[in-house]
Image (cartoon, rainbow, N blue to C red; front, side):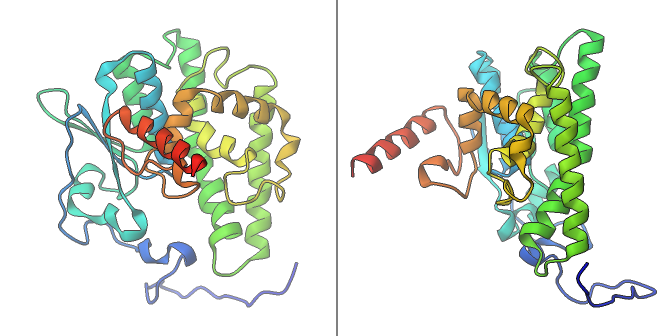
Length: 292
């Protein structure tokens, strides 16, 4: 291992300078709002405040899948929360999610609005509300939740661990990259072994487990995450590749990946979504660009 400067932790840690490299402007050791800002409210029952990151994409995929099944009550407004600009620290957003992380959802379909935060909680809430993508059989339901909670517990090692130190940290630290690359590959192996047994994570049915895992690990093997496909030799995980490609072929998944995105080709970005026709507009934009 290459030599690195020795760091001796102080007896008491204090916040003396920004840290976090690429995300230094949004990292701080205290919670709560930094400024007053009300959240906008659209005309649909569900109000989503999010960004097109893997955690945000989970929810827009879920909502688009519900709409594809004919659940009209799943119509939603998706408002952009730009975390680089600190939108997640506005007072209105903190009221919905005191943890200041996207995504956050307000369900205004009942007499009293219900706030839902944490992406796994939102997926479970929507699955139960609309009776979809969560099996009723106890064993199958439990297997679905096994993999949902696996994702919630594992992805921080992929994103905040490997992704941060490999792609975003201001200094490349060999120990950190090696440690989290090893864990990322172990997690891919866990998925690959499971997907060698069943077509989807919970068994024969497509569930919220697949919707939760796909944006993170499907995105990784399809080359969307951290520019690390070659580094992690993702081609080795044939079952994960097959599963990811099958899920990405779903029209609702393609739509869900567009919402609240700030990266990629312009025609792949739908900054905010307030009606199903918004996707048609983006399709026309793409056609116009190709003809131009």
